[in-house]
Structures are given as structure tokens and as C-alpha cells.
Image (cartoon, rainbow, N blue to C red):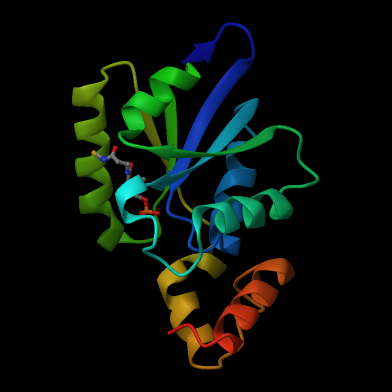
Length: 170
Ligand code: PNS
């Protein structure tokens, strides 16, 4: 589980369109037992236009949220998570589990990733109960319909959401 040069390293992968307080909560919990976390934004070069925010915007927001935290790195990866993990020298993936409804997909992904890369372990963390119903897709929908999202995302993310929907995004 350890990267001999740099202590325990974990990857926290996701779409992060955009990063929410739920994601932030999981990362900060992870930092209590690993030395470094690479927050990895998954993308497909051929599908880059999908999503509300570009990959660069997502990376920038994540960097902003963790600007006080030197143990966090932020990266984008195209392709398989297992290949990115190998390249980083990481043997641990962190995922958040909000509810039983997340379980089936998460379990399938963890086992498939292990099949593809047997040294890779996935651990699941439960978020603070305040975030157990939170998702980036609901945040996008609420913001798109003019609802307040200040409880769910960092101020810098809220500003970006408001600006994006002022520009007329759907
Ligand atoms: O935030 P999300 O959308 O739930 O994250 C899903 C993500 C990005 C972790 C998953 O789709 C992923 O790992 N994508 C990279 C491509 C890959 O490795 N696919 C095979 C998974 S078994």
C-alpha cells in the first residue's frame, strides 16, 4: 500500500463537475490516514465538451478548494484509472459511499479495477451525514434553476456556477 519514496499515497478519482462539499469532506477524511492524495479528474479526450465545466475549470476549482493543503495534488487523467494509478505508483483508491444505492456500482468498479490491477485496493469512506444526499448533478440542477447552493459547494465554486448559468448554460 505504500509508495516507498513518499509515504502512503491514495488516488481520489471522479468527475468533479463541480467539486462539492461532499467531495471535500471525503478528501479531508482521507488525509487523516494517508500522507498524500491525488485528486484525479477523469476525462475522455474525445468527449471533452461534455459536462458543465471544462476539465481545466474543474482542476482550477479543486486547487482553489485545497489551496491550504500541501498534501493534495490535482491531476486529470484520460483512460483507465488503473493505468493512472500505476503511473502514480499508487495502490489505494478512495471513493465515497453515500447510500446503499451507490453500493452496487462502486462494488462493481472496485472489483473490476482489482481484476485489471490486482495491487489496487479501493476503500470506501462515508461522508458526514450532512452530505449523504448531495451530488454534483443535483447541485448543477439546483444552480441552473436559480436555487441557492451555498450549503453544498465552496464559495469559489458557487461563483463559477452562478456565472456559468448567467452566461446561459443549461
Ligand atoms: O464521479 P464519478 O463520475 O462517479 O467517477 C467515476 C470514475 C471517474 C471514478 C470512473 O468512471 C472511472 O474510474 N473512470 C475512468 C475510466 C475507467 O477506468 N473505467 C473502468 C472502471 S472499472
